[in-house]
Image (cartoon, rainbow, N blue to C red; front, side):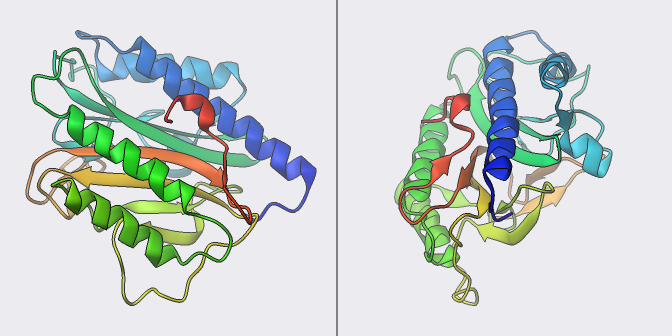
Length: 254
């Protein structure tokens, strides 16, 4: 989406605040012993209380209201009564929604309880890379160069990037152009550039081992082709001629 009016800007600000606050509250609510279904239902009440509708449910009939992935699940984890959080689990919550015809997306990974799997560094790295990448985005910047930044920073920290997941345009639907804002440098994608006044969701997928995903038997959940863990962080931003405006800043990823 390219924002052209004040009404469009306000619409994006409102839906982005809704998904950001929902993500923040779901993170704060999460405790050892809870099921991911319980956390999802809590998020649903928050979203609906602000008049917003779950984007994955509305768009894909996803069997949940947020994507909640635990441990070796990389993305699109299905909330379940049977997945009970334990001390040391790494969890990712991805919240996207529609409100008054506008769509926004954000997500984050964090540790439940103590860091007994030694994954906090992975999480910190993912968050730091996201913020560094966002800081470099402005109108005219090559999309591939942001992928290069993400990949370079991840490798320097001792990690890999997932090559078949990435960011995307957002605004009037959940996924728009520019699609495939990847976490690596694609030498075949050197022409595309970020456009001023466009809205995009920028997300990192930083892994301990895998570089690709595979779909599990439920038809939704992604895991790593080589196993391991992943950390994901995501903001929806408005591109300007200078520093971008982080529309989902209320989620606390900073």
